[in-house]
Length: 69
Image 1 (cartoon, rainbow, N blue to C red):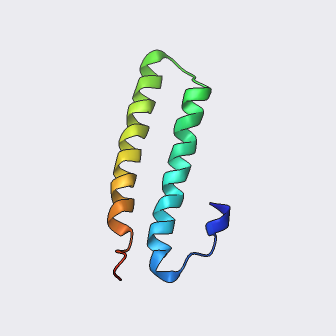
Image 2: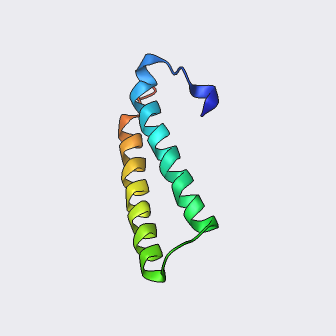
Image 3: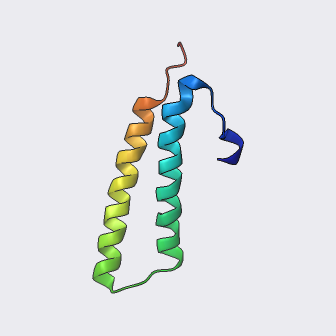
C-alpha cells in the first residue's frame, strides 16, 4: 500500500476502495490472531467482517478500470 500512495487518476477510486479493503483485512487477521470476548461475540464479529470484506471486494472489482480504457 505504501508504494501506491499516488495512484494515477483513473485508479483513484479503486485505490480508495483497496485501502478500505486493506484496513478491513488487517482487522480480520487481528481478530484471528488475538481473539477476544465470548464465542458468540467473536462469531458475530467474524461474520460481520466477512460480510464487509465480501462487499468491499465486489465494490473493488466494479471500480477497477477496464484495461481497454
